Structure formats: C-alpha cells, structure tokens
Image (tube, rainbow, N blue to C red):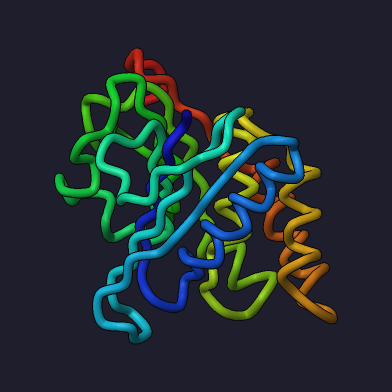
Length: 187
C-alpha cells in the first residue's frame, strides 16, 4: 500500500486534490481511498488530506502517520518539521515552490518534484488553486499513475471552461516539474 499526505490551506484545493488523486488511481485500475482533515473550515486555514492506494481493497480509515509521499500545496509549510513527521526513509515530496530549491527541506527526502504551481494556477485560472498543477507534478515525480488518468479525473470534477483550464494546469505541472534526487545532486 502507498500512502500520500497532502498539506495545504483552505482555498488551494487540497481536499479536492485528494479526491481527484484517488479517482485517478481507480481509473488506472487500483483501489484507492481519500479523506480530508479540516481545522477551522475557512479560506487560508491549514488543511490536511490523505490518500491510500493499493492493488487490494483498502479497509483502513485512519489518518496517515507514515506517508510514502508528501504533497505540499502551500509553499509556506515547506519549513515546518511537523509536515515531515513520520515520512518513510524513501520519502517523496511534491512541492509548490516559487523558486528553485537550494537545499533539501528535510534530510529524509529521497526525491523532490518542485513546481511553481501558484504561478501556473494564477496564469491559467486567475486564482491560486494549485491542486490540478500539483497532481500533474505528482504523476511526473512518482510515476505511480499516468497523466491521462489525472486528466480524465479532472473532466469528472470540473464543468465548462474550467475543464480545459485545469487540464492545462495539470499538463504544465507534469511538463515543468523539476526533479531533485536525495543523493545531494541538484541542491
């Protein structure tokens, strides 16, 4: 089983990203579940969401304490040690960051996919909803699922011109993510 924990703020789309990610895995023939954990439900408040994926049905419904992958929709949380708590030694990070990484945010990380998702979302959507861009970056970083399944899930969650705008965000996330290996190269 792979476990993914998403960290963001209200308005960035972390909860919907978790739902779309689970739907994408299902489209790729896997079993998946997702659920959010909200503090105060308001724009800007911290949001954590969880996704589990496996080849077998998933029965566990608890929070994820030892994730295989972290997705940070909010770049301000990059320096928070609590975000990295429990991350497995082969940990992967998909990070929304406004600039290039100069060092690893945490020593345990083995692979980082960095993307300026906020900039892409503002260009394509006019608002800082970074979720679909981060999903594209996740597909390119982990290779755990296809970009095609992400694009198909976007079509299930959005209507009208938002479909094409969010598809462009996911495609740009997939194409423009910068990968950093945990061996020290690229930092």
